[in-house]
Length: 164
Image 1: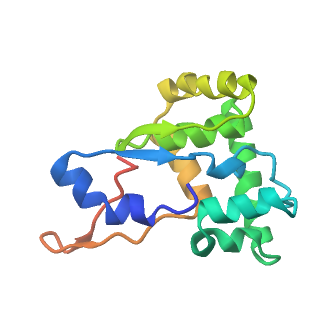
Image 2: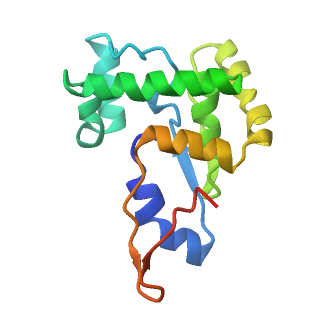
Image 3: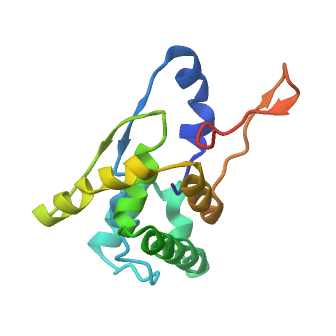
């Protein structure tokens, strides 16, 4: 959700020509997409350092800077609103968005409580109702769309594989 370049552009040829899929590790971005940190305040210490290291310093460090917190609040708060409109939790919305991608073969979930597993399994109900309209609402809010490579046969940029 937060960084789509590698998945949607760099690996596109593998998905198209080889029929391969991918495993999503931490589709909730180490808890960032659960709703717990929508205020932009991630506690200093082990949690923040773990998130930075797990998410990759270069790709996600802007979410943790003072300037980046404005965008973090906008992004996460908006996802919470969209999730509420859809009648699901923010975590369920993020999981559904990840697994709704036709190139996702599996999503690995982490949890510390059984209740989190029970909540995450309910994503199947949203996935059954997932459609292009829901996809567009989330995608337009995220503002993380990638610049797709040029298709030199049609002289037009490649289309996103997410919206079709």
